Length: 304
Image (cartoon, rainbow, N blue to C red; front, side, top):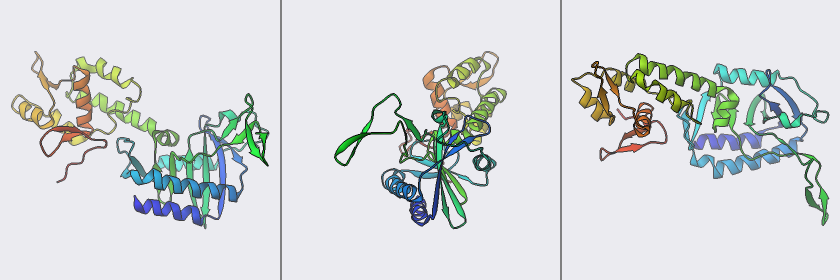
């Protein structure tokens, strides 16, 4: 993480040119408008923002390769060469531009990005937030020469926050909004649904639990709950027999049940059991040095 922080500080201090664009990612293709801010204005903002973020935020983060199960204390890294990142860059490079001052739909821009140039290298810093703020229905004043003067009904509001940024060969994802902007969230939901189906096909869960699982995945923020499942754990749970069910149950601290037909499944009959099951197969539940079950903020990777 220290290397990334040093690099970010070097980039903003070395950049020779800056541009800012408001974009509407809900449109297909993406549309945008250039925000007319000077190099000096954008340089001052970026130096201040990066200093603040590196000192107050990013030093508390860990760096992990995408996907890391989206804990708040991680910044996820994905290669810039990934097709999804390339598609996003291509979309904003080719987006139709509308004139800012003549555009009556400024409220529809849901994100913005600041583009930095260092020599022939380009760096993208992207925020999912409308950069335009309208005071059309409000009277806002600021001090000018010891008097209060009314602000324009439209102002530009840059925030010291980035949801994702693209630096050299990597894309760094800071928030869930960053995933959404880059189109990564849909992939995780798709993968989660595929794994959900596997759990029943591979007889790890009983068909009777299908409605319970689907209801859980419809809850807010749960659609991606199986996206980071560990295949080695699934193989273990898939291989449960009468002979090894006690040892596997003990190994993962998960209850198993035997149906009247003789099938053996993991028991997810309560909310607590279901959460334990999901946390186990996504490696967010493990054993500490005292052999007690503990939760993990990120996938637990056992040392060999």
